[in-house]
Length: 108
Length: 116
Image (cartoon, rainbow over all chains, first blue to last red):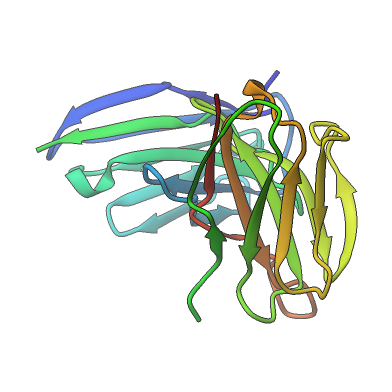
């Protein structure tokens, strides 16, 4: 059983569309992290969210941490083919515990 | 700084053979982690070192697996008597832990193991 459940598992959209992926748990976390992984590469850290209700923006990416610190979301505005990848959320502990990820494909 | 490097990037072996992977962390990073990632899943923690000391091993790390970090710099992960279920991407990450640091883990590109 995954500690973090991510949805959807797969998402395919056209360039210019918006998308949201979710990371949910029944547990409360002090913080969560989001990584992006491209095929054949290791994950790269995008953001760490720490405060319940927090919203962080990274260019066209908006990350939100739920008020109860049990869930998080990632919203991408006007997606581009370069956004294609596996988006992973994980606990921010010394040993990271990842969800299964959402595979995002942005078609040109 | 060239980031975390791993060698080889790909390894194909026959069942029953032994394999060894190497990870070179970011210089001066004192922590080094090994994860395993199978298709359709996120990485799963295997073990980690602080300097040369191996501080924790996951139950996923059977007795066929051994990891070392002899001088507190590079690390090796050896799998003996490989099984088809060992086929996965093996990821290494490193971080700097100490006063004023955030323990952000930086991942290498991984070694993809295929056991035939």
